[in-house]
Image (cartoon, rainbow, N blue to C red):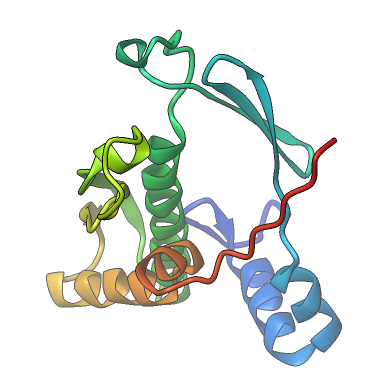
Length: 177
């Protein structure tokens, strides 16, 4: 392990082995494809707790909405999920190309189109983000053209970004308990 090449915090041989297994092993591909699951449980007020595998995430709303502001809101976590997935994609693609990253930050921003629909004051419009701005700031050992190519590969290959950017069918069910 001590002589194993590590770049950007990733073991290069291990990550290449994983990526090749995704291509060559249908069972492994099926395991990483999903289904991925989350269960969200109301905690009172606007608080909720999300359970994913062995992890939990707290959610809340800002004090201005009569909440405790004890955690980030779901819409802030959506922005963070996009940014996190883009970060992972950037690191993966830089590592595959042998590019050392020194600093990487992705700033995200969104503005609701018509929050009045959420509030029950409007029957039309989109209560969500009509667009999300993601800006990459990177310092790495490559020229600007290469770094831009890595960024585009991260955007194009990001499961979260592409889920948000494209129409995604949400299949809802309801059960009284």
